[in-house]
Image 1 (spheres, rainbow, N blue to C red):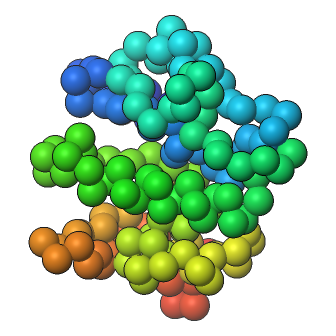
Image 2 (cartoon, rainbow, N blue to C red):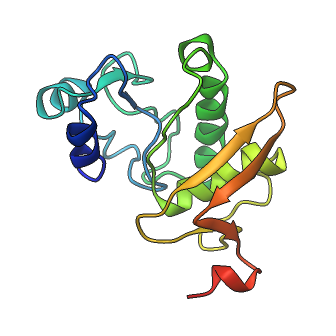
Length: 162
């Protein structure tokens, strides 16, 4: 949220256009010992965002039982976030800017572009994102997605190195 805040302020975007999803956090940041920053704190500290996708008790969208989120739990969370991206709350927006971290972003790219997160594993990046980069994912009417413009490229391509 701190990363995108200057952009939101520059564009004069507020909670009508900006959503903070309780499931869009980096892999392994929660578990049974820490359920994330409470939704009320996020609202207080980041009034430019409208919260959604938080648990009923105000915690992040962590549905697991491990002390630290597992890869399987993260995959399931990624699938929930992708389902949300196709929900009426989001689909009527036309354009969505999703801000996230490398590991979770890689999972989302695999889910959207490849149609599955089954090959996703922590540290085994398929869609590398450069620091402070952007990735455009075009979603066709049939739900299929493809990378259009990218700072996120398949890890084996020469442009992904460096």
